[in-house]
Length: 160
Image 1 (spheres, rainbow, N blue to C red):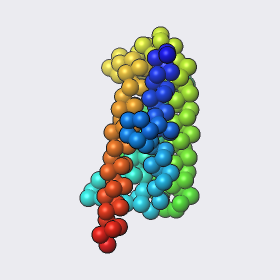
Image 2 (image 1 turned 120 degrees about the horizontal axis):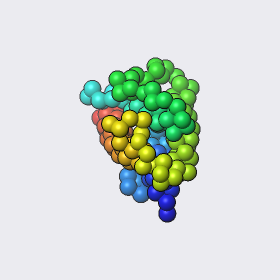
Image 3 (image 1 turned 90 degrees about the horizontal axis):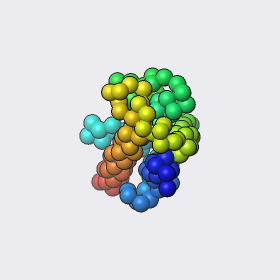
């Protein structure tokens, strides 16, 4: 298996259809979350909606680079989710997440070994492969947070 296929499979696992490491994936979790629950903050933690936006923000930004564009995303904006006030707003975010994930994965899957080892925008960021690996780790980290948040929200409902 080529490295790009391996990375694409890992991205699929965490983002859209895997079950191996966490027993679930981002898509499954966000699509099964009611929009009002997605907005709830538990003990000052980021909401599920904010975490979904955060990961989607990075996916979209790195996708743009893979498509030949500039790296325009900035950490300071990565949690600035637009307001979600309806089910339709939540659906827009989850649809963007899923569509952008599919696009990102399809671009990674066809990368050559040379492209994966090339400098990602600036030497300080390392190569493409390292950045894709970081995207996988970053997504698993926040998926874990979402799973914990859903348990806390469920416990909160039970204890009311």
